[in-house]
Length: 574
Image: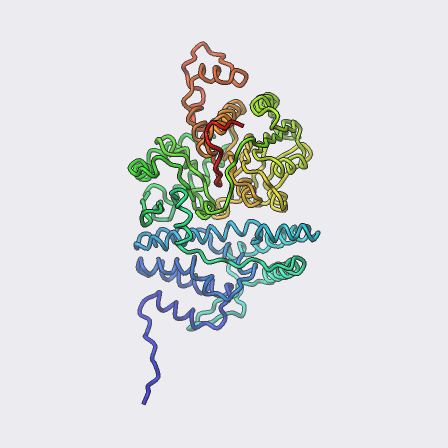
């Protein structure tokens, strides 16, 4: 006689919730998110460290694999919005329980979901197909609907939703999360998804699973450091192609401390306030929060000689991390959306470069940029026949430059709108060139974009995992590397920094190295050295030529280099 097989009774929090979820009939993301969040709450409140790590791993990695395939666009949006703050915690608890590979995979997966979301989950071939079939306006309608859906989900997470028919397990109800408005927004996104697939003849690309092997392939190019601030402690995960991921604990870099510092950087309304906030933040990072990481970098030859890739998670992406490491003699830093940026097949930037300059010195209601003429003159002398400049650039000039140029410098104001990031914009003479406009373009050929006169990246502290600024928009539109500032900088030090940057690029440095060298030069140069190097860029008005006028980090620490781009070898000057 054969007895029926009896299942083993679940004994841990993880086993109990995993069993309940596996037995659920409705396995849509809408319902699974609610069930897993309840598991996560139980684990964080009453579970062991291992319980917390397992729940967070399921929330960030395994949930999509468990959900039905394909995951609709509306479901992906819920997954992203409900994930706020979770990647940093997942990496922390997984690393704390010695699951370092899982920690890396959890963060990399979350970053990939965010990056793919920026263009509405579309890949470049589908965007090109929309333009080719004359349906570019459909993309705008879809982007608007997706923004409405995001707002609906955020509203859901700030109030108690009314229960709707969903999944019930052991007397516990998991709502689908649909209010009437939210349901309508999701239905509109689904309808537009069907329309887009119909007119292009292409399905929306599926969410691809992220494995540690993919990350390992990426770090063959350079070491990658994941940096995050969790509630209990900050941490770095150092990933190389020769060893297991190495966690470095940063007890001073808690989520609370990092958020407070970023808030101080974004709040100042006067120049003295900004100077004080930047100095305090860079000093805190260099002398307290990042000390254990700086020690690791100095002790490891492959990190010390650089360059390194930095994946800054959540709120840490708005801190001047590279500048703080520079003050500790750290290497050049590439800010990466995620590690797999390094695996993209790119050709090196070789001379002669096609250089395009777009300037908008006078825009209504904004401060005039008085030095753009002399900056353009210097660049024209520097690059000769390979440069084309638009001294009073329009929106069309900006798009044309980004389409045709190899190296594009934008000398204009920028508007950062953290609450509505798709409306962040470059301010040109005839209007604003927005992130939304950039993402709707199907052919941007610029290899390196330099946003010299504006703050290209700020974000809403309520949405710290969704840093969508001008640099990330340019990357998603096709630009390999972007150099941009995080706060307003005076015209004279910016002009000097940019000139040194171009000279370093011409000498064969890759963009991250060229920026690091330029920042180090600006902060350590005396008045006499500045005037001797660039006579028409700096005039020494004081008799004391030994003073270093731009040693303060507010003049140079805000600029970062994101993406990845190799350049020509030294000696082949453009």
